[in-house]
Image 1: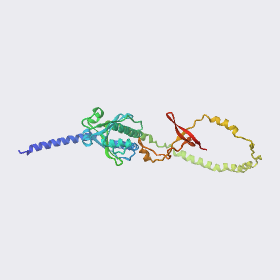
Image 2: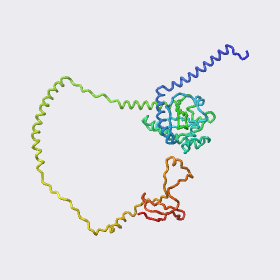
Image 3: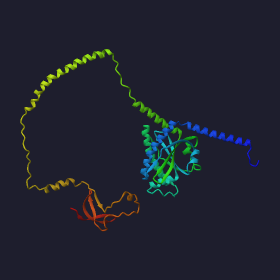
Image 4: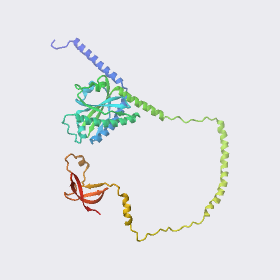
Length: 386
């Protein structure tokens, strides 16, 4: 009929579309029901604190300002990651060895890894036209080892127990052809938790990174947080003070007994006040003290310290002293020092042929000139500084 669909065909297509949409929404709903809203909030707080500590560590490695935004927690499947994230990308597996049983994946874009590794190697972050190789993967693994190690320390404080990780493993994956199912088998089937962060490194990186948690591992962390909070609440709750039970009759008897005691107190103080002036008269009767001026024996004029000099200096003859030969000095800024590389020439404040300085324990004692003794350098003393 010239390509025109009949009413029966249109109805069948609409029915199939509704069934497909219903099945997709049902699977998404079942996935979202696996993690409650409170658990999502707990996971987001854990990720926020951990990545905040990791950002501080990354700043010390790349020497650039690092900003990581508040995490966004959502449920996802492997198909979602493949369709939404740029390919190829770098997968970094972080396995927990102490305190927690499980692992998670950190996903970074290939270009971001090149920028970070170039900054770590002393570059300016613009040398990203090279192919990502083993050197880049090794450098990013070391960076993640320090970052996630500091994050594990923060996690230890939150969970109130020791948390440790194994050295992270970085791999370049295109998500389609080079998948190692043994490494990411817990993410290939079913749903998992996806935590997205926006990462900025100066003006060089403005990107998104992801952290993937298996649901069982995320629930274990939430359970540890819940247990720790319950324990703290139990320790902080103090029982109310016990109120002594007493009948009105003893209270009525206690009131009259206190009144005579108050009346007797001034009477007991009167004899003490009468004796006080008599006691103060005793210190005035003191024995006279014989005080004399101190006298010291004067030294005779024939004292010669040279007699004792040799004997005294022999006591320290074996004391080692550090002798330093200083060819020259100069002053450089931190930026200039960071620009040092093999082949850099540093100009000193001395002219060629000028005597060099000899210092003993940092004190300037002599001048000299450089000589060569067989294959070693030496210094010939030319002047002693008094």
